[in-house]
Length: 75
Image 1: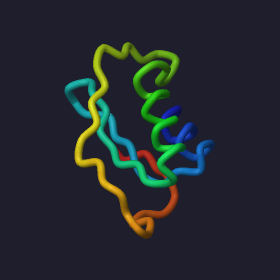
Image 2: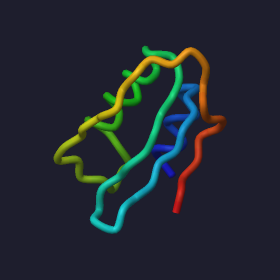
Image 3: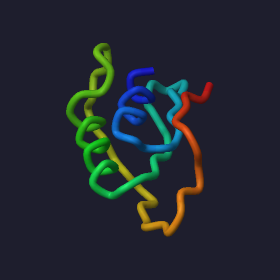
């Protein structure tokens, strides 16, 4: 919920999902500066009850056009 709200606040599109192992996975798209701001938020802040021990980002690439719309939480 907090990650979704932060993504929307930054004007990003994508999704986020909590896993059964207590981690979070997702996909974010938008302007590079806002994506970097989101990565910092995920590394340092997160939701109020989160305990962040590690943040890793993979499959990063530039895209010409957004492939997603909106920002949602998947279950």
